[in-house]
Amino acid sequence: MSDNQDVNLPSNFLRSIIENDLASGTFAPRGDSARIRTRFPPEPNGYLHFGHAKSICLNFSLAHDYDGACHLRFDDTNPTREEQEYVDAIIDAVHWLGFDWGENLFFASDYFERMYAFAEYLIRAGKAYVDSLSAEEMRAYRGTLTEVGRDSPYRTRSVEENLDLFARMKAGEFADGTHILRAKIDMASPNINLRDPAIYRIRHAHHHRTGDTWCVYPMYTFAHPIEDALENITHSFCTLEFEDQRPFYDWLLEQLRAGGLIPSPAPKQIEFSRLNLTYVVLSKRKLIQLVEEGHAQGWDDPRMPTLVGGRRRGYPPEGFRLFAERIGVSKSDSLIEYSVLEESMREVLNDSAERRVAVLDPLKLVIDNYPEGQLEECTAPNHPLKPELGNRSMPFGRALWIEREDFMEEPVKGFRRLFPGNMVRLRYGYVVKCLGCDKDAEGNVTAVHCEYMPDSRSGTPGADNYKVKGNLHWVSVARGVQAEVRMYDRLFAHPAPGSRREGDAPELERDFLDDLNPDSVSVIRAWLEPSLGEVAPESRFQFERHGYFVADRFDSKAGAPVFNRTVTLKDSWTKGGK
Image (cartoon, rainbow, N blue to C red; front, side, top):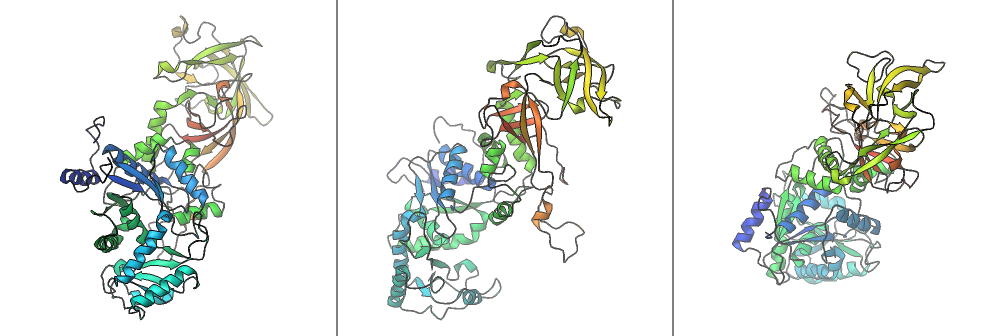
């Protein structure tokens, strides 16, 4: 651990493993100063989601805390699904979260030549063979969880024939699916993943980095341990679905180490539980469906559980790091309430976001005894707990915008805001007394009339003489800025989208799309205080009383701001919905 690091680091089983390995000298430095090496290995076939944020924070933070290094490595072994767009987006997202890999940026395609040579070594060692069964036949021969598999009739091919076929596969002589290279392990193994798994397949597809050089590509399960070994990774942290693959991970590295092809000691694969979060889906297939079918407006839709979506919604990167720290890591699957994520964002924003005033459902307030045409500047703090951030001016005049809900002609019991005869304070301004209201032909209130107390201005000697219970925010009609505000909420209305409900008929199958929240977004025209008219995209603020908002990173322009609601001031959801 670095001398400048906090010795009271959060404890978990991964830290215990690392500390035991460091104490025993299991992974001595191999020509560099890194004590441990971790990696974040995304496949460049989509945008990162909230679950990836947990893995990113985990791998980079552990490497940092133990004077190690974390690699960013793209497992680009399937050219039919991968694009440079995803590579660029992933790099941007990891940087945005606050992490840096220095010179340790790698791709599986960096090792294609060596991987091919390693596969040839396995063939020569009698540990791999070319199979010519169809995909359907392979599944039939593989067996089940209760029945052992059967040897392929091609399993006894000679080394020479296998090498020849594999070279011809590489040369592009065969169509996709004609042959496949399999490891030769044990078709009777109780672990299906050890029943001669595929390690190379034919793909006549253009690769985003290597072009048309290759016609055969390694399987992820073959490439991943090799990459770890060649990069001197010490601790290869994976989610629990890879636990059944660990025996093959260890088997492959043992074969290559026996042949002197990789260094010792071999990396350790260690599994932890993936992120399971209420009110979202994190399946890449389902996320693609949401985008392609138009249920979301792209991968960066602020309702999407993607990092680009979270960023556009205004979630701060520090919030993701705090969330990852709070939920910790374990070996047991658990379901995390979405409110835990929102509270992490709320805590960061409460500390960092400056305060501003916005009226989201405007109703005109006219102060009848205030001079027409006169404006004066009221002073408001940028942050109530951070005086060092200074103050700002808010123009006050005869006509103001207030929230429609702040007036009731016939108040209900306990209502403390504006109603005829009642007095309230206009925050940062004056105390006013309600005189009545104007209505249109349908009886709708169109304006509220008040009179103000000239000696009641906030911060002046006489202000405390007025004891009122209501305190309202407002925006100047003359100087306010009208803006589009997008009120985002959760994309799904049920905590487990697509899950069965108590009482469902046995034959009923639910579609996760049936749980889409029809009120997940609404667009309104709001009035904002003048200082919000020229803010830069991605500027975050607390709109007093309403929650936290961000200037949209793409649509917001100087003079024409567009704001997205990030999160409310407090959780307004229950386990059963809103």
